Image 1: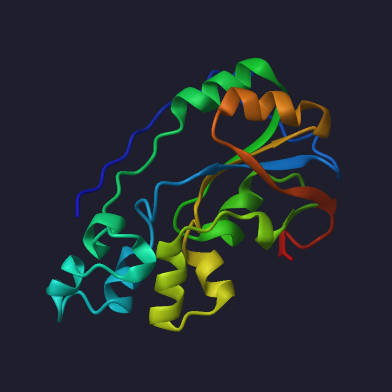
Image 2: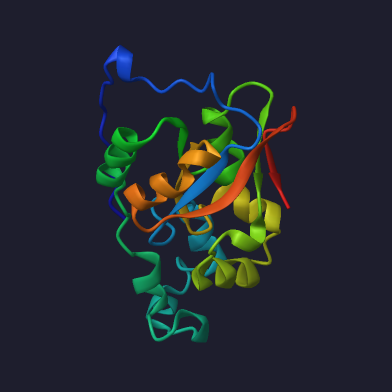
Length: 189
């Protein structure tokens, strides 16, 4: 397991403001390539990897011919280029990188007070790996969305008028929900 990080600075005039965020704004998902770098302590426990490292060489039917190890170690997708492009194309109201803490901890960081992210679970393109982890570990849906990215590596919030243009700039992206007025921060429905 190898991890790294970067630190950057943003010019003050380029810092995103969520002040114009409003009910009806669209939440766009950028797909992840897998677990990325979050939740690996739980992943190791789910599959009992420490006691049975050979499980990494198994090919669960759900993974379509990949070994469990290959699926778990898929390289983390980096979103810098598509995000820089969408920032040039449209007025982005919020961006959330979905890491440890999943949807419930990460999305609220970009929300304006009084705004809530209503996510349509049926629209989230959840890869089979996450379904396998949930089934194998007997993990509740809430805990899955609170720990893992569930196939969404990043979310971008834009006006509904800018949604098509934003998705074109982002490339492989799709709508998973909208902003609603609520004191709740994230609602999965």
